[in-house]
Image 1: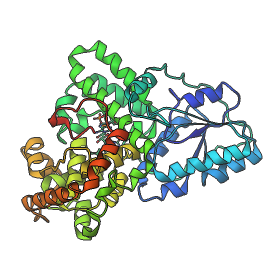
Image 2: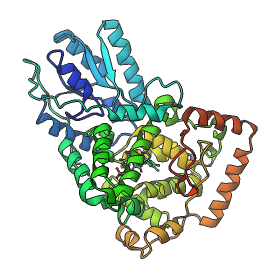
Image 3: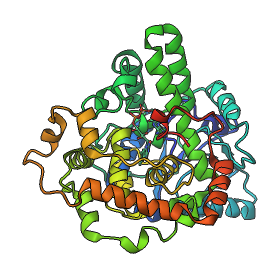
Image 4: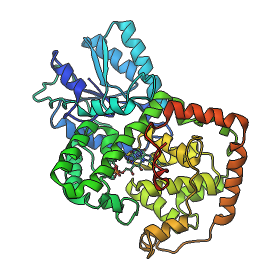
Length: 447
Ligand SMILES: Cc1cc2nc3c(=O)[nH]c(=O)nc-3n(C[C@H](O)[C@H](O)[C@H](O)COP(=O)(O)OP(=O)(O)OC[C@H]3O[C@@H](n4cnc5c(N)ncnc54)[C@H](O)[C@@H]3O)c2cc1C
């Protein structure tokens, strides 16, 4: 049983199914190639290591350091493998290629490899029509019972975890459930009102993203617990509905990467290729990364994110909008940088959102945030900015009005290209939501 981004015992269908059939070896492989990639960071590993430590209290999880094929080959030679079980995974290009190699190897070795769905993403999807129904069906299934009393394989050393430090957000299944419970019973009451301001969001958002990203809790159990709570506490309905919708978006965004893994490095609409690339500016990029652009809200959010591993959705969107429009930076490098800062890095959401906030999907309303307006709306007394930029804000590296006007002109010139309409239509057919368009005020979050 190959553990990847599913570090839990509850509602773990492959583990449960494998355990019905005979002795099981739950195995986590620390893959140096993945952990040294430009989107990986020690803060991810710290969270994963805590989650594995927690899981090891309930399951004899073996840990190996190495690339997957040699590790599996060694186990096959020394122990024999009757079958390989895993969750279907939707993640970055490297892991996608590694999964393909593992599939090939299991075929050559005559080892059955069973991958089961877990995140609400539908593999080999033919059309987006009917996707929402398929998602509801997956989320409504009975959760798989937790596996108890699994014994270690005699003579097979469990191995040590590579070195880790304390995670910025506590990892593990127990922490995931505490986070969900405190959200559904205390913190989430005003979620719908308080999710956009960084003054309130740290407390009022669910903070489940890292747990969902590394699989210490399942989407299915999260959705089902939320819907039970909706029945129980009608006065929370507005907030819980908003939360439920976002869980749906989670899979909706990941489905885009499942259907087109190249979105990690290629524009959704390739007619935008070349729009920003020639304008790359190292000094702007460094100022953005270090939180010294001279825009208080941008700098405070970047510094808060770097220190805590998290920032709320609206402020992520503003950070990206600033990099992509005000600084006119092509998105892949900024995307890898933010991937390293988010403990909850989830490639399927991350790259789709990044491109959406950078205007390269072709099918979303252009949304260029004014950092001053965001400060006015979400930090009117300047409390958040003072907390994270205590020395006071420095000179601005670009002027909003000028940068805004230039960005709009540049976008408009590219959008006028004849192939744009056709390409955007193809993106809508392949990836677009089938729901009727949301009101303008919410258009930044769906496409
Ligand atoms: C540029 C950019 C990059 C992002 N990268 C990531 C990422 O790498 N990993 C990640 O989990 N989220 C990402 N998000 C989406 C969103 O910002 C985070 O999911 C959210 O802030 C996590 O905090 P939370 O768990 O408290 O969210 P809540 O508001 O409590 O939402 C609950 C869950 O719903 C899902 N969700 C919420 N908002 C969105 C959204 N807009 N799109 C898709 N799913 C959503 C997440 O799984 C989240 O945990 C990104 C957003 C932007 C604008």
